[in-house]
Length: 275
Ligand SMILES: Cc1cc2nc3c(=O)[nH]c(=O)nc-3n(C[C@H](O)[C@H](O)[C@H](O)COP(=O)(O)O)c2cc1C
Image (cartoon, rainbow, N blue to C red):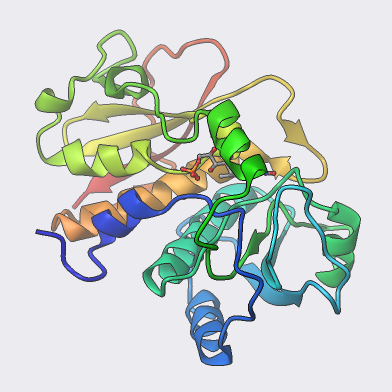
């Protein structure tokens, strides 16, 4: 049975919203979002700074968005763990906003980046990988949004066995063989990712999930950082929430690399080790 604010239901039901109703969000909802955002601590060690931005005041635009009045911006100091921390923190806010009934969509590429970075007072040693509108979804998707979802195959994800492996990369993991990890891995699988590339790969060993980034060539850019590391931070957020919902306790560490052979373009990032 779905419970109110059941974390796994929220993760399943979230989708990118690109067509908004044109109305301002009530201030108390925005206050709740910002208060939640300011309390997030990343397991990857870097603090993410959030700021509410106003479309009119800050002259913001995105060619894929209609009807948004307010955006959530965020930035992070350039250093190791910045992108994963950003993904983890920002997705937590996205899911919190989803629970409040607000629409969001991660936007890294299709924004007037100059205007957003100016509004964020971005310093040279900082990076703003992405932003999101915060608003109420319109009853109807714009034609452009429908076309985008189709082009991105936004409702599809790669099969379980292409993303998740048992012991090493030569053994695809079937959902039925994943045991207690199954809902946790499903929560990773439905996560949003830049152009829906789903770069996360997971090797399951006794008591641990090991997360890897499958790089898409040409994705790491100076303006956004390595956006697929952001995707891995998003995966960590979904993993942690689903594990907590399933009563699985664990911690993230970079010191549990199982040292298995990895496919070309794949990079070990971190593990979630059961307590
Ligand atoms: C890091 C990141 C960057 C993204 N950048 C954009 C973007 O620039 N423009 C856009 O329309 N969607 C962007 N998206 C949204 C993805 O296209 C979307 O999450 C994916 O297609 C899956 O659809 P869903 O979110 O509805 O499940 C981004 C998503 C992520 C996670």
